[in-house]
Each structure stands twice: as structure tokens, then as C-alpha cells.
Length: 496
Ligand SMILES: Cc1cc2nc3c(=O)[nH]c(=O)nc-3n(C[C@H](O)[C@H](O)[C@H](O)COP(=O)(O)OP(=O)(O)OC[C@H]3O[C@@H](n4cnc5c(N)ncnc54)[C@H](O)[C@@H]3O)c2cc1C
Image 1 (tube, rainbow, N blue to C red):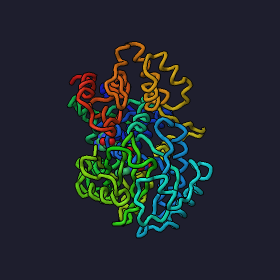
Image 2 (cartoon, rainbow, N blue to C red; image 1 turned 60 degrees about the vertical axis):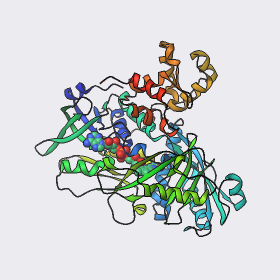
Image 3 (cartoon, rainbow, N blue to C red; image 1 turned 180 degrees about the vertical axis):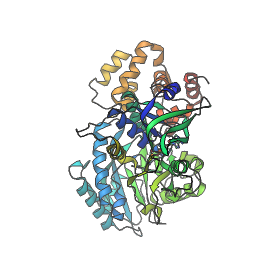
Image 4 (cartoon, rainbow, N blue to C red; image 1 turned 120 degrees about the vertical axis):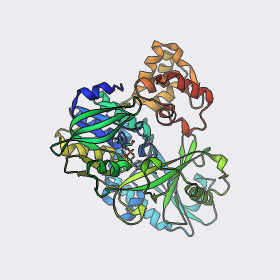
């Protein structure tokens, strides 16, 4: 995937997509696949907005049942099935335990009924059967859990994903189908002819150049930035998106074997403690946010809330600041409506302005393929059945042992390539075949070889160290990135 700014100046596109989060990436992917000439511009790195700040669940969203959003849950459960099938390297089944305590806002019968309905809605797309748990069974499954006041629980299954890489794999698919894509290019204004949108003025954030990109249609898939883009189109437009902030903590070590759904006792929110890359992801919060999306940050009160509520369920654990490896904050781009943040729907809709710009509003990560399909069906419908795939989709036919023998890498190294890149592990091995010095490890836990850094830059368009540590290799979730690893990363980055 080449970052070639010149090509944007020479082409008139059928479709220009602004925003390289999951929705923009998938829309560009499907549009290019349907034969359109597509451009995709992202002002930061792909997935650097909300699409790398999620709880990393591909899920029906059990809690939306409480808001009677049965259609949303039904749709999401079908999308969960599709993603488990097409991206098994990035989307994996995950068991959840819901422990219920005396004093919880939702009693045991309610949780059991909720999970029963959840599985019923999933029908044949259920991941695995649920199970109601006695108090003793909960304690056996999760020995570290608070026993005082424990009434029982439920075991059910959903899916976990690598959000940044799933987004990237959609961008790579768009490029494979011929789309011109670039990160670090910001759309700064709309170009209009006779009141109709005809493209954008864009700013190359790396080359500090402004240029024009012309297109017959423009779609803004700018998530929390949608209101800003809307006002570039219509200066006094009413906001369409309500942003609510959610933060996560990366806790050192695996707190539990299952994902634990915790009902907060201080409000009616639920949050998760989830095993994630050898550590634990704790989140999320859900609070209204009105400042600019670029300024969103984790605040101490968000951390205190998650630590306090987690400590209640895992009393023996040390929740001191030294146990926090990383924190991150993201904004949900929700359809603008009043009421409590947790009650606002996660559905999506499209808004077409007078000048013809289409704005994508709302949605959740899980439904991204459906968002893209619905969007494309408005502008370039096809009638044959469309098979969906991401960049690393497909079955790996070679055994780990055979791939290790042929490449001279250790089995563990090959396994981690297969886990990260799916069938595209072969592309990384090709680099090693061409230049055996790229076998060298730049990190031991997790195993990272030099070839992956080259691949991040040459194929996956990484431009900064953060693009690699945070979104290509997800090193930030494993613990502090060592100085030698950072030096190796810096050595492969394009010189400014
Ligand atoms: C805390 C939290 C937890 C969540 N957990 C889950 C979950 O577990 N499962 C789930 O299904 N959903 C989850 N969601 C929701 C999901 O993450 C979002 O719905 C989804 O990521 C939104 O994707 P997007 O592409 O619309 O927005 P984004 O990912 O924010 O992408 C928009 C992009 O537009 C770019 N952009 C903005 N302005 C411009 C411009 N002028 N020019 C060029 N580019 C521009 C931005 O840089 C950004 O990358 C969660 C959300 C949050 C906040």
C-alpha cells in the first residue's frame, strides 16, 4: 500500500471517503470492490480515532436489551458471526462471566433472563451455549472474585477483536481493489460547484502541502469529528453527533481467565474486566463530552471510578497506580439525542446535506460491515451476493512446523505471525526469504522480528513510531516498549 500524494491531484474519483476509522475503511473497501474509483483520506493514522479506543468486543451488546433495542442486538449478533468467520485471526470467541451480588442494580434472575434472550436472538449464530452458575461455580471459574454477597452468575460467549488491525485490514482491502489511500492527510474544506460538492481541499500533514482532491461524491465517515465536517459544509448546521467519552485502563497481569461483566453499584452502568494480550483491559466509562475530539483525555476521576468498582469485585488485588500500564480515551459518535449517555442508541444513519455530502452518523464497531453495505447500497447498489473478506482472511493450509522449517524462524515466532496477519503471514516470510537478516528479533515478549517493522512501513503505511507500537503491533498493551525496540522501529521509519 503506497502513500502517493501526487496521484490524488491527477484523478477525479467516483467517491472520496473522509476518515480512516472502521466505517470509512469499510466503505472505501466495499466501494472499491464494487468497481468505483475511490480515494480515502485520514488526518491521523488509520484507526487512530475511536476505532483503536474501543473495548475490543464484537458483540451483540447484551445491555442494549435493557433499552429494548432488540433489532440492534439481532443485527449485531449476525455481524458477530460474519466477523468470526472472515477474520478468525483478529476476532475470537471469548467467554464471559457475570457475577451477581447482593445490592446489585440488576438481580440474578434479570441477568439470567437477559443472557437467555441474547442466546435466543443469536439462534444458530450463537458462539457456544450459555450456563446459569451457582455461587460455587462462579468461585470455581474465577477464584479471585469477591465471595461476600455473591448470589450466583451466568456464563455466556461473545467475541473479542483487535480493533486497530481490523480497521487496517479493511484499508488494505480498499487499496488492493485499487483505492488510493493515505493517512496523515486532512480534509480542510469542501470544493463546491454550483452548490454541489465536487471534492475537498486537503492538507498533507507530513509534507505540509495543500492540494485539491476532486470527486463526484463525498462521504464523511469522521466519527466524533462529524459535527466539525458538517460545519465546513453548512456553517450554522445543527450538530448531528453526540459524543460520549469512554476510557480504559490496561492493568498489569491477567486478573481473570474469563471476561467479567461488572454491574457498577454506584450507577447503573456495566463495564468489563477482560483478558487482553497477557494483561487486563478494564473499561469503559460513558460520560457526555462537549470539547473538541482532538482534546479527549483520561481524567483521574475516570480512573478512580473503574479502580473502585473493580476493587469491589477483586478485593485481594492491588489497584495502585503502579499496576496501570496504559490508559486511553475515546469518543462514541452517537446519533444526537437527549437522555442518559448509556441509553442513547448505537444504531447508525446517513445524512445527506444539500450540497450532496453524505455523513455517516452513529453505529458501533461490531456493525461496521453493515454500515458500509447500507451506505454503498444508497449510492452504488449491486444485486449479486457479495462475499466479505478482510486482508488476512482465508484458511492457513501450512502447518506452523512447516513454515518454521522453511523460514528458519522459531515455531513461536511463526505462530505469532499467523495470529497477527492471518494468511498474510506469508508476505512477512517472503521478506525474510529475500533478506535473512530480517529474522532478527527486536522484541522477545511478544516476539517481533525486524521483517514486521519493514512490513508495517512498506505494506501497512506506518509513518510514526506510534503507528507501529500502538496500531500495527499493539505493543502498548504488553507493557512499556523497550529502548532497543524503539530504536529498531525508528531505524525503519521513512526519513522526513
Ligand atoms: C470507549 C469506547 C468503547 C467502545 N467499545 C466498543 C466495542 O467493544 N464494540 C463495538 O462494537 N463498538 C464499540 N465502540 C464503538 C466503536 O468503537 C465506534 O462506533 C467506531 O469505532 C466508530 O468508528 P468511526 O469510523 O465512525 O470513527 P473513528 O474511528 O473515530 O474514525 C473517524 C476518523 O476520521 C478522521 N478524521 C476526522 N476529521 C478528518 C478530516 N478533516 N480529514 C480526514 N480525516 C478526518 C479521524 O482522524 C478518525 O480517524 C466503543 C466506543 C468507545 C468510545
